[in-house]
Structures are given as C-alpha cells and as structure tokens.
Length: 266
Length: 266
DNA sequence: AAGTGGTCTAGACCACCGT
DNA sequence: CGGTGGTCTAGACCACTTG
Image (cartoon, rainbow over all chains, first blue to last red; front, side, top):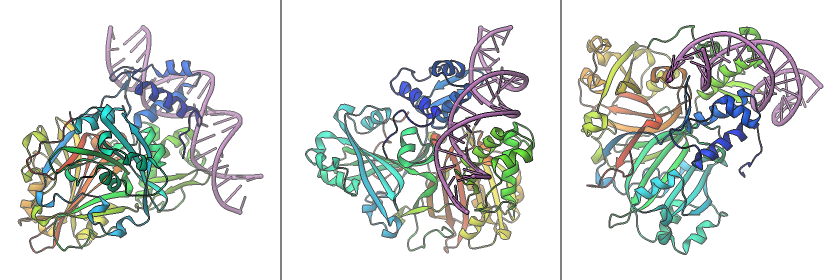
C-alpha cells in the first residue's frame, strides 16, 4: 500500500500540500493560514474544493477553524492527565502486550510487520519521544510497524530507542519481510530485560499518514496506548506509541480474581 | 445548553430526522437507506445538502457508506478485546476515579452535574448495561452527568444501576442543581461498599447527542472508559461508561514505585 | 464595513458496483 | 448497463468576528 504522491482527488492533493507546509514550518503554530478564497486562487480550484481540503485537515486535528476569523495551525494539545499508581506488584504486566501471557484467542490471526526504520527522525512525535528518554532525536531510531488481524490493518505502532542500543540487530529488524512480534524483537535487540514504567491511554483523530496506513478516513478515532519501558537500573530505554482503530479495540483491565470476562460483548 | 429541536442548519435537521428513524427502528441495522437523490426529493433539498447530513451520520458511526452500492445502518461493532488480569492487590484502585486519592491538581477546576435521570431506558447502550448487570432494562435507572473543567465540557458519564437499589435517594440525585461527585453520590445511595470488577478503554466517534453535550463536532474522537463495580458478594451492581474528549485526556497507569510522572507533558 | 468561514443550490461528470 | 456515491464548478446569500 504505497503512499500516493500527487494522485487522487484534488482536495486530497491540496490537503497534503498544506500539511507539507505545516510540517516544514512554513506555516508555524498559531499562524493564520491563507483564507479559503486565497487558497482557491492559488491552487486554481473552487472554494468548495479548498474547503473540503481544509475540513479534512481540521478533522485530522492539524488546524483549527475559527468562524469569522480564519484558520490557524494547531499547537500540540494541552492534556488533562489523570494519574494513578498501580500496585507495583503488578509491575511485570505489560498491559496489552502479547508477551505478557494473553489468551491467544485475543489476537488470533494477528501479525505484525516492520514498515520502516528511521535513524535520527525529526517530527514533533520524535521530539516527544526524545524527551521521554532523556536524549536528543539525533541519538534515536524510530521503528514503525503495522499489525493486522485477519489481513485487515488494526494498529500502527512506533517504537523509539537509542540507535546505539539497537546495534547490529537493527539490520535484521529493518527487513520488512517476516511477520514478528516487534516488541519482543526490539527487546531482544537491546539485550536487557525491560520493565514497564507507565502506560497511558488517550484518543486522537487519525492524521493523514496513519489514516493511509490503517486504510480509514482521516479523523477516524484512534485509541492511543503509549508508555515507557525501563532497564532494571531504572533508566528509560524504550518509548512506544500504538494507535489502534478505536472502535474495534478495547483494553480491559481485570481487578478481581477469578471472574469471567465482561459479559455482553460480541 | 438546550438541545435544538428543529432549528439550525438544514443539513443538521435532516441528519437528526434520519437518526431518529434509525433509533425508532424504522431503518433497521444492515438495511439500505434511501439514496441521496431519494432523500433530496423527500426533504426538498439539494443532493449536496443531504450528502452533508449523511456524511455527518457516517462520521458519527451511525451508518456506513458503500461506494457504488448505498448507505447502510451500522450494527454494533465487533471489537477485539485485549484482556489483562491486574494483580488483585490493586483491586481498590478505581482508575481515574477522584475518590481513589488522586492528586487534586489533576482535576482542579472540575465539577460534575447530573443532566438527567431516566428510569427504564431503552437505547442500545441501555441493553448493553442490562446485560452487564444481569438484569432487564425495565429494572434499570440511567444517570447522565456532565463534568467540566474550567467551565468547559470535558466528559459525559452514564451510570446504570438497579432502580430498586437507588431507592428514595434517587430524588436527591435528580436535582440537577448542585455540583457533586456523582460516582460517590450513587455509591452512597446504594449504601454498600463497591469494588472494581473491570475497566476497559476504547475510542469512539462522538455521536450527535454526545457531540452537543460536549460542544464538539460529531465524529470527534472520544476516550471511553467503562466498567463494572461489584458488591462485596460479587454481584455486579453498577455499570458506568464515560466519554471524555479524547485529545484532551490521558489516563496514565504507573507501574513502578516512586517514579516521577511522565516527562515532556505540558 | 469588510473579511472570514458556513450553508445552500443547480448542474455536471466521474468511479465504482451489481446485474 | 443503470444506479450509487465521489468530486468539482459557479454563484449566491448568510452569520460571525474584528476594526
């Protein structure tokens, strides 16, 4: 499923061009974008077509539309964080990680493949990862992977870790051929036992890139599960961020022993 | 913020009328809806206007559009459930519940008010709640509440419990005036100590009703946290389902003792 | 008052799907 | 092939915000 370059509907081409300018910093955060009429003139398209492109970016969360004022590049969102300390006795459980002994039925027909391996990446998400791992983006490698269930795209995962830690095992990971458990492969490449530091849940709109990989419309709700794994000495070593198609996934935490799974689910 | 009846843009009025027919069962699940041209003729509107209404419902997840074929009423989604058993030692921790000793800073400026109290409700969500609590919808009462942070809508919560269990305390709850901790008020009304059975996380698109309550566009990603609380004898007593504006909320689970909160968050 | 985005119409052509 | 949704245009009027 190669990324279409400059094909497809006109409104999508326009949306991509605007998004590219935002990514390039040509339109900075909080900056006002050109008006719909100005875009229409520039791209030689009808205002409604431009409008569709702009609406797409707004749904994807890239820009914000203020009626009667203009459209603006969005800054990374302010989040309300609800913190909970889980009993450290359960520290070894990686919520939602296959290697934690999940019932195999939960992920029957699942496979995961590496999409790309990028050294020294530089998007805003990469900056965040660097902050989590107390290092710079230059020291990082990002691994992008796509998991499918029954051949349908299900979750996009990104893993960040120090390039140095990956070492020669990186080459093996880069081979996009085989299906594998990427979490496990990365952990093995790093070569130390990792323990979970924290996990967070949130929901976002699919941006244009994730939308193409998951084969859903931009703006589709995605369930985000992110978190940090540490080396035994407590140093943060791995930051991961999964985006699952939200309305097809539930993470369930069971708090009581010996009870059945939630009822009434198909 | 009263619900607009038959006002507002034409495309929204049309969307509501179609949604009403779906809710009433007039258009059953998997049924094909009238074509855009047929709707246009019926409502005396342009096809593009109808199209906007239909797109709204599709974003809200109520219908599914199949190109070249037609639009169909969606059935409740098949979900992939990832189950994890948390050490029962942490059974008393209600993830994200204020009464569990969360740092007050996490929810500074928060308030929660009851919106409505409905006996014997009958939507699909109510059916699900009844299944979770091993009873019929006739025996249930649903409590809808809206929490705000700094006066901005933040999360819509629905609580289901047996009408009988609520007893006379229901009248007090129904008073929409005061701000209160609804979880705590309901628990007190029931009169027994409750413990957490399970909690689940998923992401959905805001339907038309939630979109109005949260003052966001239909289709906005919402972070869903749902679960069941039990009486000490193990009987499921309370089912709750919160929908938070997804891109403004993160639930963070800390697995290691004595570590700082996730870094790099604003 | 001027400029912005929001809604609506009329009409056209295309791409996709089933028969 | 016919019907469906998908895209695009041209033009119009409205509602909102700011100066």
